Figure 1 (cartoon, rainbow, N blue to C red):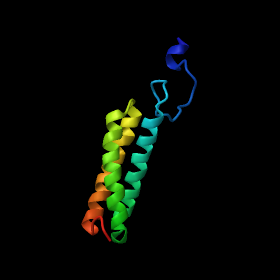
Figure 2 (figure 1 turned 180 degrees about the vertical axis):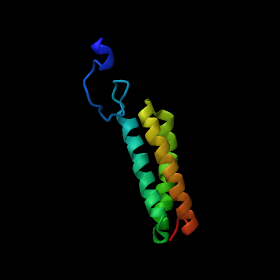
Figure 3 (figure 1 turned 90 degrees about the vertical axis):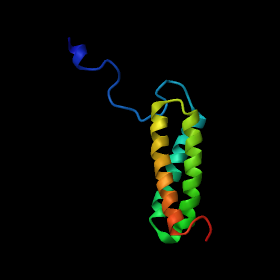
Figure 4 (figure 1 turned 60 degrees about the horizontal axis):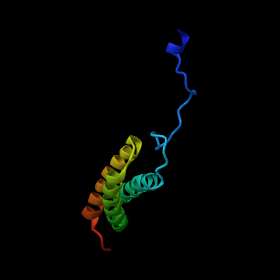
Length: 103
C-alpha cells in the first residue's frame, strides 16, 4: 500500500503551460505577452507621468489578451490570460485617468 501514499510519477512539479502534452507555441507566446503587457501597463499606470505608456500597453494587452483567451488550449494559458487582461484593463484605466493616449 505504499504506492497509495506516494505518487508514482517523478517528484517535483514542472512549471509548464502545456499540460496536455502538446506544444502550443503561439498560444504560449500570446499568454506570456499578455501578462507582460499587463504588468507594464499596471506599473506605468501608477505614475501620472507614464500615462501614455500605461494607456497603450493596457489597450494592446487587453485586446491581445482577449484574442489569446479565444485561441488558448490549456487551463494554465487561460489563467495567465485572465491575470494579464485584468492588469491591462486596470493599467489602461489608470493611464486614461492620468491623461490618456496622447502626451
